[in-house]
Amino acid sequence: MLLHIIARGRIGRGPEAELVERYMKRVTWAQKISELPDTGGRVPAAAAGSRTILLDEGGEQMSSLEFANLLENWRDGGVREARFCIGAADGFTPDERKGADKVIAFGRATWPHLMARAMLAEQLWRATSIIAGHPYHREGRQ
Image 1 (tube, rainbow, N blue to C red):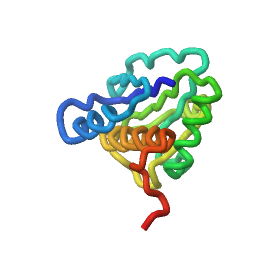
Image 2 (tube, rainbow, N blue to C red):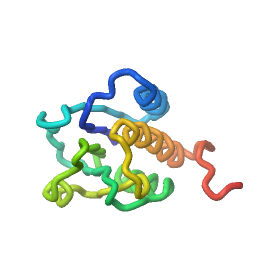
Image 3 (cartoon, rainbow, N blue to C red):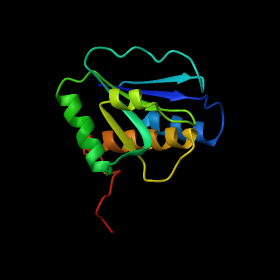
């Protein structure tokens, strides 16, 4: 399954870009990152068999295991592409939220879109490592 990050804003060079690169290099699944301007720009068309996930502070909070299970179920169910959308400062319109398959949040705090992208990259690495049985994730261990 293709993991496709669609993000508003250019990440450029900096610590957030380094984190995204570091974690996405570890992900063994097919992946793609599309950057759009803060306003305008064309969102890449969704292929048949894709799912769209919006990252939004008002979304569902999922544990890393729940996130991994979601991706694993979609992959095993024949989903070809999981599209992770990170909005600009004003977030998403009600129509965009309604059209998404899932809206998730990384906690109740508001995160800058560059940090959200780095956090998403880490969670994608964590989820795929959980699915692969890699020891990176240590939920419930002390």
